[in-house]
Image 1: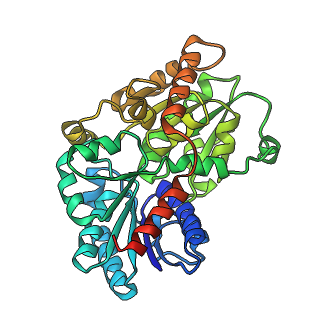
Image 2: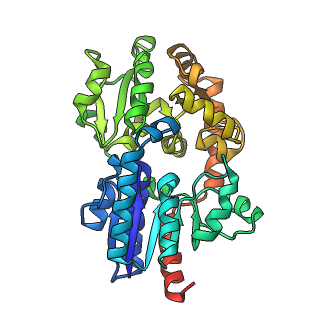
Length: 372
């Protein structure tokens, strides 16, 4: 069968790649067409129609500024969908773009599978009615999403969290420290995100930890769509290494981390790295978001546990002084550190075991064969 996968962000690219691998196992004659990043390209053995790095615009204001590019990307994907005529389009998160594709595909008789639900439970819950109309099968990765959709009369499949698959399959490098020229001092990992706007807002504040924790070494997890020279504009002459494609190794060796809100907060939680979650954006974007968002937390760890499990520093609270103070509480044999680690045990129990990609792929193939 023919599958058309669309992911617009780094995390979606990872999950899309693992889903492609699982689909190949379920369907030996699988053919793919992709919109995504480097990992999906490798798994599908082809270049994406549009690379994910050309699609990730964060925040209301930023989206408005880039409406022209978004419109061109939509037009390109729609035309390609009609040429390719897949058995199903598989949309991976990225709702602003993918919901428009879902509507288009449905109008043209293309089956729509949605892997990793849009976070409609966070804001504008009324969008669930549109999802019911244009999405044939929704595959959820957060436990509480099943009850949310059921409340609106929509049955969905909970497949587990694909980050568990990614981490379970990852081959940790026993020589990570020496291979990257790192010293013996304990590591504070800095994860400033994968979008240019995130990095420029948050990395300068993270850099200040260099002076606050002289007995530690800071290491940045670099995003695949940037190079070391890009990060040097922030680090300058400071001895702060940047590692690429080794985020899990970095987290595994870190005593603590400063993490931009997003998928990485859950990765740090699964790997049991005490973290401070940070987020800062255009003030207008945040003002609009606060009027619309209905959830209490921004980090996935807190959302899944449904209580404050890791500290979140947002907007004006996201500053070097607050980051330093909260990070200090996580280092050493502190009571706060022990509490965070206990919270991660609750998280692990709620997430369950690996196998999301395999389960989702099996259901997609079954539904297509049954004509559901």
